[in-house]
Image 1 (cartoon, rainbow, N blue to C red):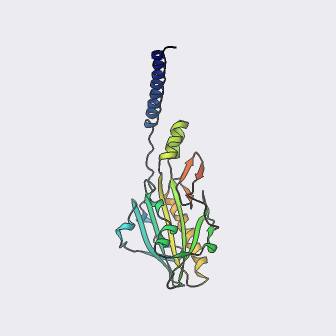
Image 2 (image 1 turned 120 degrees about the horizontal axis):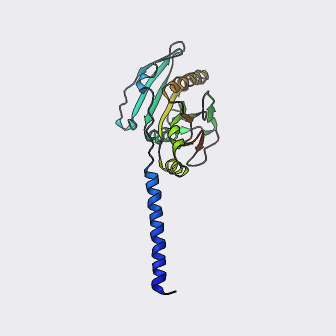
Image 3 (image 1 turned 90 degrees about the vertical axis):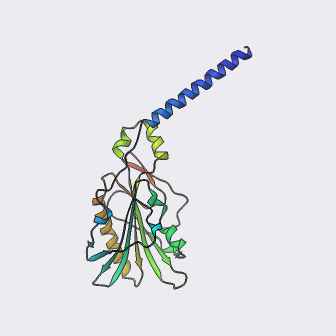
Length: 241
């Protein structure tokens, strides 16, 4: 075979590959996924939950307003004098997932009591709620922190895509998300059971703000829904719960 013929064949192969890649890119670009919104603003979340009564607390540091919607509220239980803080953040592109207790608490000098880590099982679809305990290095005071999130993926739209388009979006797209943290100063052994009751009630109320396809999780990276299942991706192995 002459050299010019070989070159012509090689160029033909390269042209075919380039055309195929262009066709694949066009196929991917033809599909888009809508942002999934909350049913209500976070400010509309109930101020009264069980025997707890809440009040808004301004966020003094603008750096904490990193998402599209936020809720910062102190709840008190009059019969016991217990108080705790509820924090929620909603983002259309999962920016809220960049913040979790392992980031915010340790960055402020608190040390986690890893042996106390546990989970709280609640009703509904998805993972249980993660519970941490942190200790202040100077005062020695301790604080319980509950953490969980919901992934809001447009499952109906995902089902309409071809397998190739679905794989493309699942590998690149950050779905809408809402993260929740509850901070509970530990005064006595009675504080944790009442806080668990509060967190359970918060999750129940929050599900009324979410679309039916919302999936609860507590891993440190976003979860990617595939049909009715979820793939949990973690940056590294979690410490023992």
